[in-house]
Structures are given as C-alpha cells and as structure tokens.
Length: 253
Image (cartoon, rainbow, N blue to C red; front, side):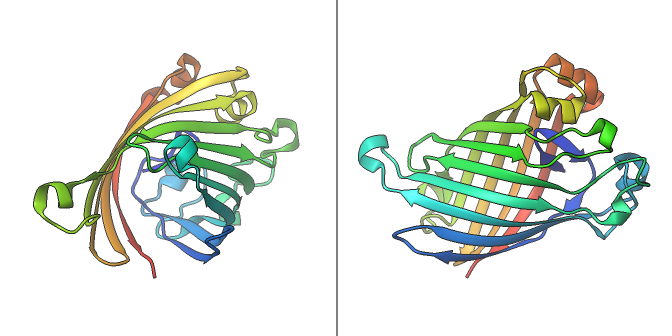
C-alpha cells in the first residue's frame, strides 16, 4: 500500500521501482539524482482512485535531486547529524486526468527536508514535505504552502550478530514509531478542512532487513497508521486505520 502525506493513496498492491545516482565528497556534500515510479497492479484508478485504469502502467514518475551531508556532532549531540534537502517533481500521465473541467490528478512539486541522529540508541528523525504549487481548477486550487511533517524514533537490532552468529549488519530488525502533523493548507488540500494545525496521524512499522551479500538487501516490512484528528477520521471514514505490508529489494554498487 502507498502511504504519503499521512494518507493512503492506493489500498491495492503497487510496485515502486527507483534508481539513484550519487556523487559524494566526504568533506562536503553528496549530490543524488533519482527517479521513482509507481505502477498499479489493479484497475483501482478507474474504479475508486478517480483516475484512469493504469494496471501494470506507471501512474506516477517522480524525478528528484537531493543534497545531503553528515555533520560531525558526536561531541555535542552524541551522534553524527544527517541532513538532506530534496526537490521532486511529481508527474502524472495525462491519461490519469479527467477532462480539464473535472480535475483529478495533476502534477505537483515538493521541497523535502530530513534531519536525523542515526548513532543514538533511539534514532530520532524529522521530515518535512512542503508543496510548492497549487493543484486543481482555478476556482478550487489548493495545496500550495501545504506542510506535512513527521517526527519518529527507531532502533536497529542486529539479530544476526547478537542471536545467530552472523556477520554484523547481515540481519537487522528495525521498529519505528512516529507522529505526523500538518498545517492549514495541507489539511484543506487533503480534507477540505481549514484547521490551522492538526496532529494528523500516528504510525508504526517493523522492517527485517537481510543482506546476504555486499550491496544487496531484501527487507520485508509491515506497518500501520491511524488518523488522530476527529475531522480527518470523518473524511477518510473506514480508512482511519490502515495496516499495510510489503517487501523491498535493493542493490547498490
């Protein structure tokens, strides 16, 4: 299932390939170019999603550029400080849109910020998504200035080294707990609600990452999230609590 901005976008199975190219300078910054895609596996778009049938076709392409750096703050904070700023363009095929006077799924753009302390036992992380452009017909444009932010904590349990005698980092279990909040513009875009601030959702996930060879990882995961605000629950109805699962495959070289 696809979860973005604290909401569920597609309750059916999806495939999300991505590729990244990073250029790193250890003394300065890492520049990363990326492209993500979302492929539907069912006709959800035509039946309930409000866009065309995109079964086994991409319904979203998201090219992006990220500038990141790890700061040596061990003496001050007890951990390095990971920071990243990212720009993405979220492109939807024209076939995903209804006629011009019946807006459904237009393109948009995002600016994202990430901050984390990965060396602490409880690894705190803060993320912020800021919507750069408005969406919708002229008389209903919303979204620009919308902010959805999360605060989460996680911990990596090295099951391989601690329990099974495997090499360090070969088998890792990572639980995560977090809270999502949103501002007035984000709430209006998602719910039609003009609350100035919302504690939107609480979420949890559990990932088991297995790396049998260098660079390759297979990571099944499960998670859930719950809409905390009563106005949000009223709008999403039966989707106020969502459980999801999947498996991630990655290879880096």
